[in-house]
Length: 250
Image (cartoon, rainbow, N blue to C red):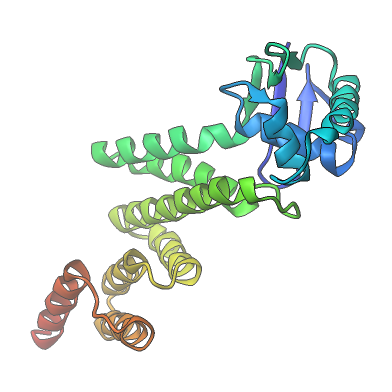
């Protein structure tokens, strides 16, 4: 049995190579499948599933409604995809793979490749993570239990961009443009995260534009002062002073 579930971007599921998302039973069925996929390493109690689909205050009277949803899911996916775990719990078959599960290992691979100085491998693995993060976790669906995995995926995407910028800076040449884009995206996606500005300063320096590198620092300094009442951290400040000294000696 080969079950592949994609939660990033458009929800899709295939069983033994055949797409089944068109057979999924409406919003509740899709959310039930997503909840089981996000918790596929353990059984999910019926009570927890009821809370996930109808809210934490939902009564046990929703049990019959849950039976209907699970019955339709089994009909759509086949009887072996959803397994009973005792009388009061359900779980996905261990054969199921979920695209979101690949994000953290791919990021770990990118970090390991960076430590080895294998920059093309960094680009490849970081690109996989960024693609998942950009697709987003179940866009168009809202539920409280989606918030934490969404934040986690967004954070992985930001770290992937940091690694992509590192790789572009290390490789130089035409790759500087990719480093520039990754750093700019970091600044846009997380305006109070100093790493994006730090990387953009280094990119501008690598492009031979020290004046613009110093302007990036000024932009961050002004933002932090006006919005948070703080100054840039020591790493950014040290980079600024180094660039200032380099500009004076030009």
